[in-house]
Amino acid sequence: MKKIENILIPLFIGLIVLISFLLFMYLSTFKYISLDTAVWGAFGDYIGGILNPIFAFLSFTALVITLLYQNKQLEQNQKILDLLRK
Image (cartoon, rainbow, N blue to C red; front, side):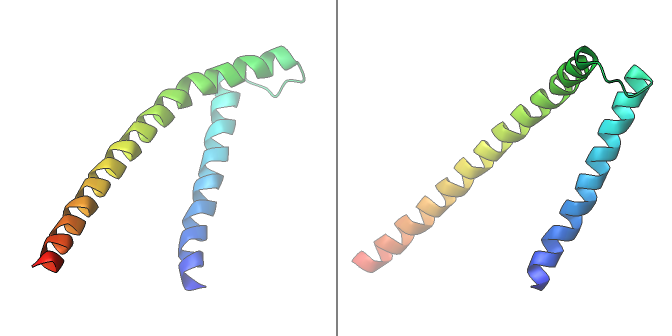
């Protein structure tokens, strides 16, 4: 239970910060909350243009980390297999 709390609390705080940041970005760009869907579409394009490169970089970084971890595990398994053969 403690482990779940250690994960959920930072996740909840991060979600609040993200929502606050998005609201700040919207209000600083468009000055007021609009009912016009075209304005919301422009805001979505704006946020997508900012976040998509960040998510692409994070995905690539996660892929590289996964490959390095897999390579390390493969080397360890090979050493164990060599020890078992002897």
